Image: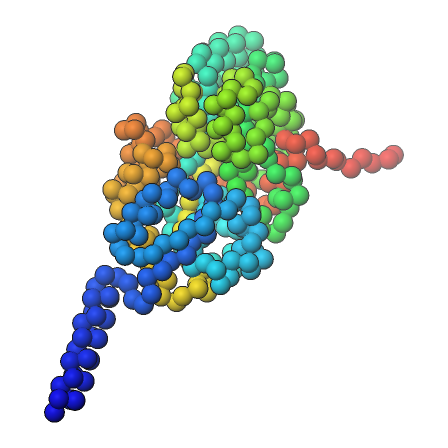
Amino acid sequence: SPLVVAALLTCTLTAVACWASRASGLTGPTRLRIVASEDLQDTATLVQRFGDSSGVDVTVRYLPRRTLVAQLAAGAVDGHADAVFLPQVGPGGLPKEAERRLERGNVIMTSPVALGLRTGVRDRLTVTGSTTTGTPAAEDGGISWRQIVDAVNRGQLRFGMVEPPSPGAAEADQPDLDETDAALLTIATGLAQAPGALITHEAYRISPDLRTLRRGQVLRPASGSDLVNQMRADAEPVDAVVASEAELLRINEQLRSPLEIQVPGGQAVSTRYLLRPLIEPVSPAAHDGITELTGYLARSAAQAWLARNTHRRPATAGGESAGAGGVAFPTARELEIPRSAEALAEVIGAYLDEVHYPTRVV
């Protein structure tokens, strides 16, 4: 009968539509809401390209990283986002209240801590260090962190770095580590010549070196973007900059005479940039959209775009040497993060000279 034919036709069209949706990798609504760290705004063009090519309506809201993590931990992101896109340091993840709301996610990019030197500084430090203090250069011919500390102690080096957080932030059971923590841990591990993760007694041993190093930090911006802006404006003349490799490469785009970038000792703590779904997204169908976006960002063309435009290292296998502007990234072996919150607090506290040891009255 006509009614039966109409019913069968309706079911057939519905099945075809469902198959087409599944074939594209997406089911249900194609809206994806992401809250991202504001330093990832340089990925906006690529994310928009994904939305245009896939038909997914992607909305990204950017927040300062610490604000994002605080809101996530407080539950303020619940019901308003399907995923977060943010930098993390170390395998421990975020504070527990934030971590429990997120799935594991995927690493999209990485960037190790590096040292940027003004023209001629490396030669000056190598010559002065070897003749004055006997401090040897790094085995690879570069500058070691020990040479940097010795140069600061002699009053021969001034540097810039993002201002670290207070040591109290490191004393939590599961502290939230950012790029500034990565920089201090890289320096501390290099000074201690630790074979693995820095432990508390090693952190105590190098505390005087960290306090010495602090005297040389004359540029103390609050964020990586502030560091780039202050270097462009030449706010305070410096001989060196300690930052993520990506930030140093961005700084070089602003300078007439670029910094010489190296990874002292060929090892550093890296920042990883992860796309992480919420365990309870706004829409259950959003998981399909996140899977599609993750796959898109992992493609070789997307990874090359990210390396070229954000200066961060590719996360996909085999892409480690595909550097920005066709220049290979230097070797950077990953350093382990201290397992002890006390060791981390000691490093930050010693650097800020906020550690006070108890005294005994005899």
